[in-house]
Length: 530
Image 1 (cartoon, rainbow, N blue to C red):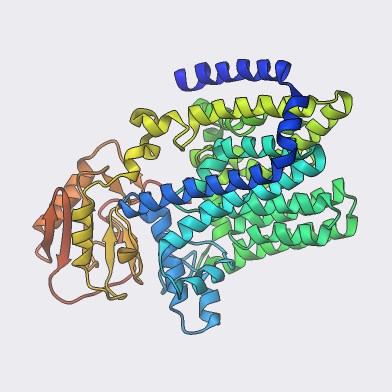
Image 2 (cartoon, helix red, strand yellow; image 1 turned 90 degrees about the vertical axis):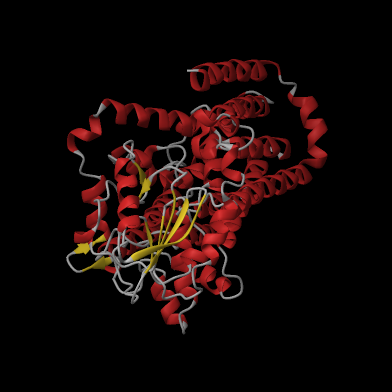
């Protein structure tokens, strides 16, 4: 109640006051001469905050197997391939090397990601997940530049600075910067560049910018196709827009039903079965309420002004459609990566609305942006994961975003346990979801506890943390404790290390690494990572 109704209500009231009283002309005189430098300074500050927080999260063992560990493993596997063909092949296969994507859907990262050839080549120089985390934070921070350029072109340099502040305060932007690494964040800066290039009447370059996110994840390919529709409808590039839409959708179908496929299964069929066939679940009161709250969290910081320009929102429609039609709550969470492709279209629609407002009342756009800075600050305070948000300081509200997740937590014990594991990429590791590092992930066989404990060489758990089973924390801790107890009693394992709740089990006898057998799992997964 305090976080949402009270804080957002006060924020809306203060935003109204700013809208009524902000001295637009004085603000223009103060900022106009240094607007460019201010925008760059804000971008650098945002990048520094993101790099620092993500670096601390990783160094203190607070990242997860899903998804940072899985992406780290996937890119490491690609980086150790002997030739470029092998590198490219690994960008659309799962994290382990023996099973085509779709055949063993529970394990590995099953996405079409040719862009990750760049990461794989970079891993040959520096094989560290910090490269992934820091690039994520810096790419999201870099979105400040095209956001500023687009706003400056349409509304002036002072408006550009205020627009950047709204951008950086938006909870969706903050979560995408600080997540445990997801590929979707690439959509934020490059879609901004695409809109800016389209505004400068450079449709070819605009499509090139919109295509880059499509190379990061197959679900972003329809976003590229929808951007083609935007060029067709708004810029009247009929042929180019129609070709982009047609090619984009054709590639999407080939990828999800052909490239990402294994015996008797495909990623497209899996996604339809798993997320888009909910029936009555789609109208469950809790799910509907969550989706309404998602829309408020996503468009509230821009006062829903984006909705006045539905054409600008066309590239956001694939992601919004998935969020509203899916029966999975993660797809309609402001904390998830699925907001990434909505951010730039929402701002493009906002700028159209503000341009219309400015045409009728001189100085109105600046006053409106000042009000939106106030409103977005209220949303950041109530929901955001940064030190500006209450959840960063209040553990009951913040959960995994609380500042304790950036501080050491039995770090010495975990470091010592990890050092006992041989530096051999063929050693099979099973680790608790929230116990992750490159020392564990850079293997051909790396799975979330308890998957594969019947074959693992080493099993690492931290019983003092949340009782993760796969990627889920069950309310009932008993299954987790039972499996740990069975490992203690198993004759094929010995305890190689135990201190402060950190336990490392080592297999006794011959090593037999391999893909987990779904029929031999100690407990079935309740859900799937995205």
